[in-house]
Image (tube, helix red, strand yellow):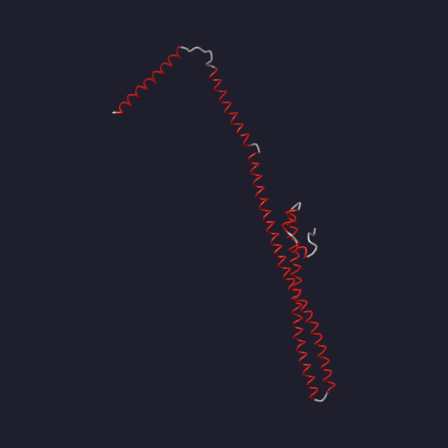
Length: 222
């Protein structure tokens, strides 16, 4: 799947807008980054070839300039020997070399323009790539945060807390019912002689403890 049809589409694209409108933003971001990286490789490869061609042309121009100088010197030498015909031939050869050199200079100028544009395109493309990567990273962070929140909510509301509370309520109710059952055995039952003596002993113990406490408090006030 190709998102962009050419380099100009990438440079002129609004990365954030494209991703915000995408049905699957994460997938779209991956595809965009892959296509941008592939395009970067292609542009750099073209630039490498252009630079190599430029160096070859520069070498040829140096060689042609040397040849021009040599033919010019030969023309002067021929004239010094009154050989106009040879001098004319040397100048013709020099002219042909000049034409070749001019053609190479024109080609060199074209290559320089192409390299300048490629450099500009590479800078813009790298900016778009960085933008896409930053957007993808932001989406990954948001997705990770959202997943953690969902997991937390599931843990909190998956029923385990409610079950625990329900079990506690049931236990408390069970204890209450057992207490009530114990109390029910005393309903309608008359106190036995032993029960009355037990109560009397308990009351006596409380009375003795109360008297001791009063004596203690009285001493502390003196």
